[in-house]
Length: 166
Image (tube, rainbow, N blue to C red; front, top):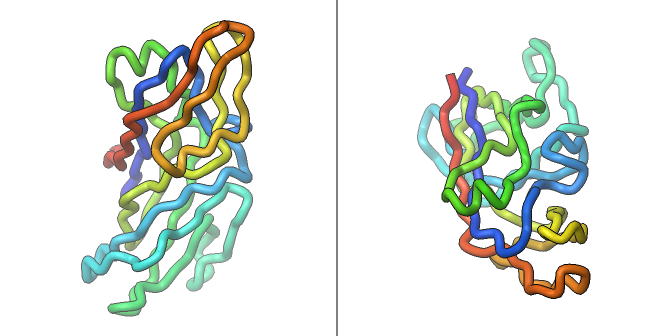
């Protein structure tokens, strides 16, 4: 069992509190990433989608997980269990300091997550208080204009990483 923390960072322009809609613990927010087999090292061809709301019984009847999958190369079973409550929103202070911020923890057995894919479903707030919802970060950036604050807002230079947490 290894816990991996998904951490992100980016440049926020006149924005703060970048996070999945509904917060980092939103049961319906889909996390997309590839899986690397811990046995043979094979990297999945397609991205896997994991959500808190989807729970499956493990094949050997030893509990549940948010994902149970078999490596297509070596046939070994693996699972991913999401552990909510450890993530938070990216603030403008985090952006200015260039810090990676924890978003979600994954308990991985037999797999290692890699290559998180930013997609839609993000939210942020301008420094003037305007809420921006359904932000699509698929292209790696977001640009808009805040009428209330009379300034441009944006997200750019997004980076992600999975860090082993003991």
